[in-house]
Each structure stands twice: as structure tokens, then as C-alpha cells.
Amino acid sequence: MTYIPYGTAASPPWAVEITPESAGWTYAGLRIVDLPDHPVSFSTGQEEMLVLPLSGSCEVAADGLRLSLSGRTSVFAAVTDFAYLPIKTSAVITGHGRIALPAARATRRFPVRYGPADRVPVEARGAGQASRQVNNFCAPDAFDCDKLVAVEVLTPGGNWSSYPPHKHDTASEHEAVLEEIYYFEGGPGYQRVYGTHDTLAEVSGGDVVLVPHGYHGPSMAAPGYDLYYLNVLAGPAEQRSMAFCDDPRHAWIRSSWADQPVDPRVSCRVADAGSGLPGGTS
Figure 1 (spheres, one colour):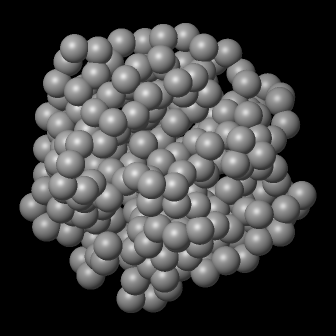
Figure 2 (figure 1 turned 180 degrees about the vertical axis):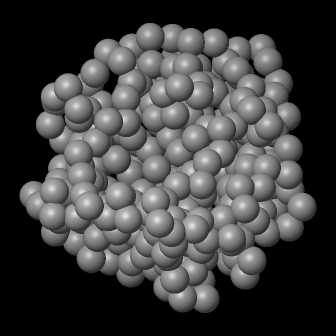
């Protein structure tokens, strides 16, 4: 199953728990927790993880360190700070709000680290109705770890992202093999996956789409409703990469952006000073 509606992958304390075993693959995972009134304790086991506030703030205790994450009011309000947890680590999270823990099965152990919001590379990608904001907080060139890759994408209402459709399931000079998770907030929107798996799902807050193989995209934000998704990717290569191959039928779309302005709603804000996307919902 590639489409997982919110509530169907819950396993307390996790509101969403996707492991490599439950997904039917080898590397990528994701947990979402709505922080209760008491601390949440867990072990990373064989997975490296990030602690990423979607809303609210928290404190992370691990390996004798305490990291305070300022967080944000919602995914549409700001880029957030985050924490990195290595494999074989016991951790405790306290605070309030909804917290995401992107994960990847790994072998190398890195130190616990803090990722400040003001060092997250933010870009406007695409143009016209394919304009979107990408927060590259754990892209290969932005943050060092073993297997995990994670980025956030914010798509203004009526726009398309993950477009043109692309894949990364074949090892080559131009393409990396990656398992991929889409976790959504906001919406409603629509997510397409096709090729070896065929899905067209209406998605909104808390829903998940898995991409084990094949082309994925577009991610479509319904007019009037901004769409957020967290991408979690991991694969077997020793060197992390997000290399992909466009669906050749639609690859020409990229060249069309040169003659189109970027949607002004893609403001690429970092500070938590109101919605970076007017009308943003969470």
C-alpha cells in the first residue's frame, strides 16, 4: 500500500510510525508524535533520526546533551531548527506540539548535533504554477550524516510541485536509488505515483504516501489550500544523493520556466513572522 491515511499507521506514542519493515523496504522511516504532557522516551536502534518540530517547540536529551528547539507555530510560518540523533542512542523529548522524526537505517555513528534554522538552505524552485519553496535542511550538501536525506516543500494553493514527475530507482551516473516518504500537512491536495505502483490520492494533514519505485509527481495543491510535505529519502549508496530522472514525456517542462516569473507567494521566509504563504493552513 502506497497511500496511508492519517490514523492507520499509529502505534503509541507515535501518531504515525513508518519503519523499513512496515513499508516493505530497507532504509527509510518516519515517526510523528503529538507531544503529550509527559516525556517521550525511545531508542534510535539501527536508525539515525532527526527531531523536527512541525508545530510547537521541544527539548531533546541524548548522549548527555540537552538541545532546545525553538520550533515554529506551523509548517507554513517558518523554517525550523532541528536535532540529529545517531544510531544506538537513547533519547527523551519533552515539550508541546507535533514533532516529526525522519529516519534511515544506517551503519556509521555521527554525534548528536543541533541544526539552527538560519543555516537551512531555502530555495524557490520552479516558476509560474510550478513555483514552490524547498527547505533543504538535510539535503546531502547541507547536513552531514550516513544515509538520511530530508527536505520540506511548501506549495501555494493551485500550484504543482514534484513536477515534472521523476524517479530515482535505478543506479546510474545520473540517478540514485532511493526509497521515499511523503508526509503531508495542510491541503487538501493530490499526489500521483505511477510506473511500478499506481496511486492518485487525495491528501491532507497527517497522510503519508510511500514511493518504493516508479515516477512520482505531481503533488497538487488545491486552489485556496496551501500544501506542505516532508520528504524522507534513503538508499544503499555510500554517498548520499538526490539524483533523479524526469519522466521523458514531461521533461520539457523545466525549460518552460525560463520565461515565467516565480509565484510571489513563494517568499522563502526563515523568521517566524507570520505565514510565508498567504492563506497557509496547517
